Length: 297
Image 1: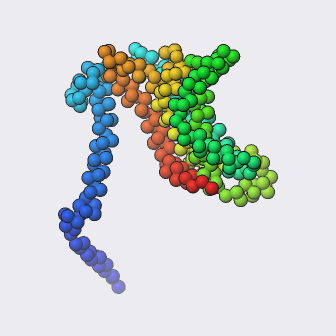
Image 2 (image 1 turned 120 degrees about the vertical axis):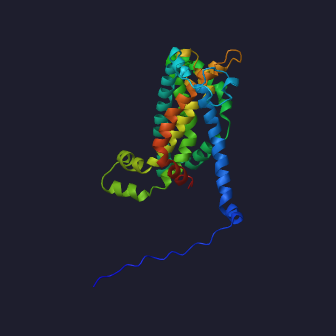
Image 3 (image 1 turned 135 degrees about the horizontal axis):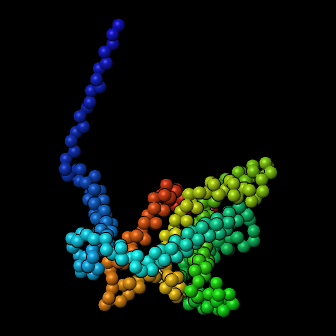
């Protein structure tokens, strides 16, 4: 016997009045549009200035009136790509070193109980409250003295800058990772020990794989902060061939008389690409890595 299917009947939703829609939903759209304009306006202005061959701030007020790639081509006549290479080496090495050192310290604080553990964690938290500018004079004098003994760790050394970055970020990253390591059950360690695993095997083959989100977050934050850092790099790196891109770009606009804002904007657009690519690659770990480690035990 043939069967017939009856189309489901739809019940019309009562139309919401404009005033009620504005009170419940409309204001959210207005806030979102305002935030979008606030975020995109500086980006559009920088891109317009990079494409403007005039190279002055007043000439860039009219967005995209003149489009040219002369500023990007002019970067090849400068040390810009040397500065980009220096920055990538310093930022990548610092990010890798920060992750390895911070993870080892956080694992020790999370898994082992030793005398002074609680006091050390409190000290890490308190030390991070002091402004880093207090250490600039001490860092300069320390590197100047070390350079007399071993030049690779003295002034105008990229290795010295990396060591300063690693030491300055170790405390806060250890405290950030410590909360995430506490979320990993210790029963996993005990089960692995019963199977004959050592502390080294547990750390490298089990724990680090489970804490990948916080490792990605720390690596991203370290890379971005090092990429944009200016003051320590300006103090330590003296010769132009060792400058980072932040120091090099600043030198182009430090003089008001012959400032070349067109090349400065073009360089800023190019240097934003590595940070953007890394952020998009690691974005799936960011929310979980920050929230899971926010509770400290």
